[in-house]
Length: 202
Image 1 (cartoon, rainbow, N blue to C red):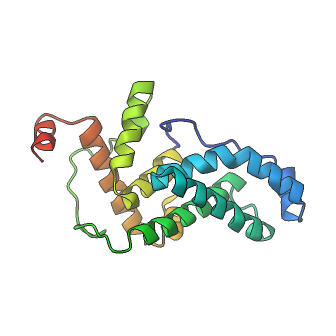
Image 2 (cartoon, rainbow, N blue to C red):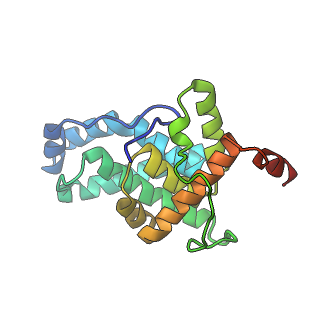
């Protein structure tokens, strides 16, 4: 599925290959330039994943520390920004795990979900400013583990395999979480007849 419209700004464009190569060779100034070029989008991703500004700052800082330590091993198989987003997702997952270690959702990742409209991608439908605000609110209302998957897939266009690897789950579990997240967003943003009444009754 192609990348969809993000609730705010789209992910950063690919940074210059020569800048990445210089940073990989140990040029600290080049890495600092990469930080400046990607900081806004890295923080935005961290905020979307954590839902908390202070946590997002901590996650972004940790992501850049990890990236700095690992830049020498960056092979360029994916774009630098994609690699950085994966690191950020991993840091956010660790942060959320610490925050909610003793909290669990009732449904497991393998629980079947019946959705009569599985092809409806609520995030992709967020084109107007007012609707994007609603999407941001709806994303914030999602449980963190569902929010992480739908943001990484539908906003940042990471493949299921990368999402699963960075969140420490299986690919089938990532797909189930994405399906569940999309369904909850659709029901909140675009309720069908009967769903709105059910939502008010809950």
